[in-house]
Structures are given as structure tokens and as C-alpha cells.
Length: 424
Ligand code: HEC
Ligand code: HEC
Image 1 (tube, rainbow, N blue to C red):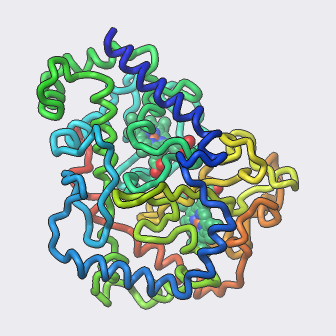
Image 2: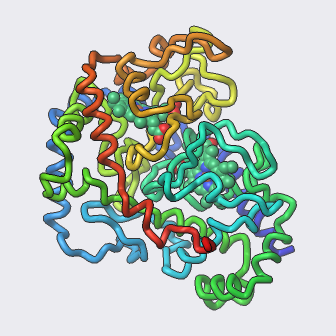
């Protein structure tokens, strides 16, 4: 019974967070929503984003060449050189035992109501914790309208999920796949006590909960389950791609093609870096030293179903939360680290390949010729001015894709610490 109450208080916290959104966006300072005009300002201030980025990365490394990989909070999470300290919830400092418990829970189908799904059903390590599908299906067969995102450096994301400014911690976010009823993912609602009983019946879990949450008389709780899951997700840090080795001084790490693609990516004709910039290739990044959450939502011209800027029902982005017309179709620019592995792309998985993504941007948006979503996304009135379209040769397109593929981190997708502990 206590567990159920705990679950309800967690859920209520999430409900309150969701209810806060309207306020946040109206400017309560809870969440800073960067408007397009501010992004425009950034254009003028960025003479050579690539040079600045490389200089910054090298400066950070010069200052802390051999610091142990720990965050400002003394976290148990190893950080690559040049990464800023992770933002960590005060009541959930990562510990090795907590992360390891979270890893077990992440891969455990006993966490779903009907015992058929785990987090890893939709977040697969070999695919940088995305799932290779356009849209996933929940444990009870319900269709989910959003693409399963990669889980890469999630601890640095200013907001969680594709378009929700109120979800700012991984702890809050974890409640959704666990308990959401519209649509059902793991479907724990109605099975709260049963699921905890399954865990508590397992001596290995009893020991793991006790190690992760010492000095608690009854540590097998939903609260602790959520904290451990969040710690594991936060530990999924990726920063050893060919690009990272190049930035660190290994000139041979990038092919000539990838180097040319990098120039385009950070250049002012392609504009990619304005929304996918910084060490995490996302404009929506916070860390322990951030003074505010740099949340950022942009319309990149994917749809225009009614000729007036509309996006398909159920997938209208920030607008669904704020009701503000100009928020139609605005989504969080995802990190592009490991993007080679996370196809199909966009919030609804509607673009199959990186080549097609590049074509989308070259055309200044996507034209959907027929069907219920027909329309010319490039003419969407809410589209960011940073997606104007551009001329691109086949060679330049191939180079840019080569650069995006240089963001793949083989260590990340093979790291045993992130793998399925129940695998035979
Ligand atoms: C049925 C598929 C499915 C399952 C099961 C699932 N997820 Fe997800 N996950 C998604 C989808 C879809 C989204 C994006 C939701 C949205 O944007 O509204 C998401 C988003 C996330 C995010 C946000 C990532 C970011 O960068 O913003 C995290 C973190 C996450 N899931 C963790 C988990 C954890 C932990 C579990 C298990 C408790 C889990 N997921 C179970 C499909 C799933
Ligand atoms: C105005 C901001 C903006 C600019 C400029 C921009 N993007 Fe994006 N990008 C986004 C947003 C927002 C999304 C998610 C849109 C959605 O799902 O509807 C996205 C999605 C993507 C994705 C899909 C990632 C995934 O995991 O599904 C890729 C790949 C991508 N962009 C690459 C690029 C490249 C390459 C460029 C430069 C040619 C670029 N972007 C320019 C904002 C931008």
C-alpha cells in the first residue's frame, strides 16, 4: 500500500510538472524557451562555429588533461575529456550500485504489467538505444505516435522527449513509460504492488536494492526503482567517436570526406550547427554549471497539412502543450551523436535515411505528395529561417553523411556496462 502511495506522489509530481508547462512558456523562468529570433542573434555572433568549437574543446582539455572522469558532484559516471560536468539530481547522486541496479531494471520484462516488455524493448544498445522502427508498440499492443529516441548523453538534455518543456529530469521522464495509460508503454499502472512483489521475491534484487539504497528498512520501492533507472540512463554517456578523436588531436581519425562534411556542417550555407551544435550536437543542452536550461524547439519544415502550417494530429510538437500557434511543429533538435544507428529519423520516423534527411534540408523542408499528410513543408509559415534550403552537390551530400557517420561511437554500443545483464 505504501508503494502505491509513493507511486501516486511521484505521478502527482509529474502531473504538476505537466500542468506547469503553460506557465513556464509564458515566461515564469522555469524553462527558458529560446525563440527563433534569439537563434537568429546567434547567427550573427558565430563567425566560424567550427573554429570556436574546436578551440573550446581544446581549451577545456588543456585545462583538465588528466582529471579523473567525475562530475562536479563526484559522480560515478565516467565523462569523456572535454565534456562538462553532468547535471545530477540532488536526491539521486549516481553510485555504482545504483547504476547497476538500474541496468538490471532497464532490461527486465518483469517491470511491465503483463511481463512482456522492458525499457530495452524500445531502447536497444546496438542501435544507440533507439529501436530501428518508425514508431514503437507498447506492451499491450497500443500504437505509440512518437519515434523511440536514442538514449545518448540524455543527462545533458535540457528537456526530455521530443517536445515537452516541462520534463526536465530523467526521474520525471521515467514515470511515463512505466505508468502512462494514454498510450500504455510498460503498463505498470494497476500492477504496482504485483510488480514490486516480483522484484522483492528475487534475492538478487533484494541484495541490489539494499546495496544501492543502504540504511532503508524496505528498499524495494517504486521511488527507488525510478531513481535507479534514471541513474542508469544518465550513465549512458557517449564521447569516443572518430570525430572526438579528431578534435582531441588525432588528425587521421577523420577521412578527407568526413573533414569536408564537417566544414559544411559547421558552415553558414548548411546551418546545421545552429540547432545541432556544441559538444553534444544539440542546441538543447544543460550541464552542472549551466545557469539556465537552454531548452530549444524548432520547426524544420517537415509538414504543412493544411497549407497554414499544420502538423498531423497527435504530433504537433510544442503546440500540443502551449496552444500557441507559432509553436506548431516545433520539436527539440535531437543530438546527432550516433545518428548513423538511429534510423528512421524525426519525431515520427518519417525519414528513412541520412541521405534523405540531407535532401529534406536542401529542399528547405519535406513535400508530402499525397495522403492525409499531403502538403509542402518547405512553405510552412512556422518553419525556422535557419532551414531556407540550399544547393548541394552529390559530393557535398556524401561528405556530410560521412561526417555524420563519424559521430558513431563503437565503444558506446559495445560497452558491457550498458549491456543486458540477463543475456545468456
Ligand atoms: C514502447 C516503447 C518504449 C518503452 C517500453 C520505453 N520507451 Fe523510452 N521512449 C519511447 C518513446 C516513443 C519516447 C519519446 C516520447 C515522446 O517524445 O513523447 C521515449 C523517450 C525516452 C526518454 C527521453 C530521451 C530524451 O532524450 O529526451 C528516456 C530517457 C526514456 N525514453 C527512457 C526509458 C526508460 C527508462 C524506459 C523503461 C522504464 C523506457 N524508456 C521505456 C519509447 C519507449
Ligand atoms: C532550425 C533548426 C535546425 C537546423 C538548422 C537543422 N536541424 Fe536537424 N533537426 C531539427 C529538429 C527540430 C529536428 C527534429 C524535427 C522533428 O522531429 O520534427 C531535427 C532532426 C534532425 C535529424 C534526425 C535525428 C533523429 O534522431 O531523428 C537529423 C539527422 C538532422 N536533423 C540533421 C541535420 C543536418 C544535417 C542539418 C544541416 C543540413 C540540420 N539538421 C539542420 C532542427 C534543425
